[in-house]
Image (cartoon, rainbow, N blue to C red; front, side, top):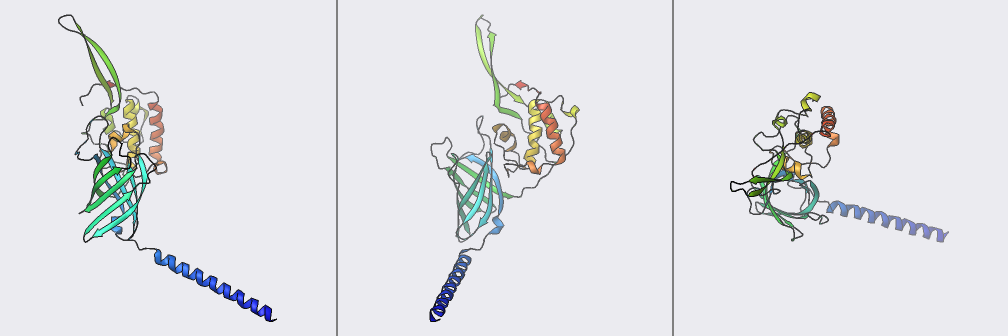
Length: 293
């Protein structure tokens, strides 16, 4: 009988110790969880992503790249965010520092992509300013600069491309050689690049707000159709990977890259128009012309 009582007491003691340990661990985990701070900084910060020291783009492929840094969580020891640029959607982790009224961030991309790097950011008034440096310093442009303004993404089916821009696909061209006979009878060879361009119909047709008809599309160029379709995706904040489309949409003020997949956001009108546009794109042709750079 004494042995049974002793065994019972031992069991009760072990259970009590286990419950106390569990309670202590729960209290410890609760204490470790930090309160979120500076939630007014949460959201999208959007601006141009430029080569360090450059005020504007230069060359065929160095057009403006749009950067969106989405701040999701800030605590005393941790910052969780996301970077979207050139169609690349990367998680960011780092820390925030406060020195009086000065707030700075160090945010790192994972390092698993060849274009990953570190963002060094300072909050100046209502702007995030800073530099990004690639982990791989052998890249052609290892350092970028940016000035980002806090902006909220809102879908608007009535947004249109600005009419003052020149919509030429600098990524697709034909190289043509021409023979010219000079006055002295000699033959000179002239080489010219021909690029495909869009017509003004891209400013008149809205594939998000209106149901398009076959007669709207039958005389359009292939690039017209591609721009009309991808303007739908741009309105939903699709992050374009293809250079052809990024050169058109990244410089547009209203465009905010927010997602790598917006298929479930498309409206009934947009889905119907995309099917019609795709049907015409399959057989459409492009015009090529010469343009000064």
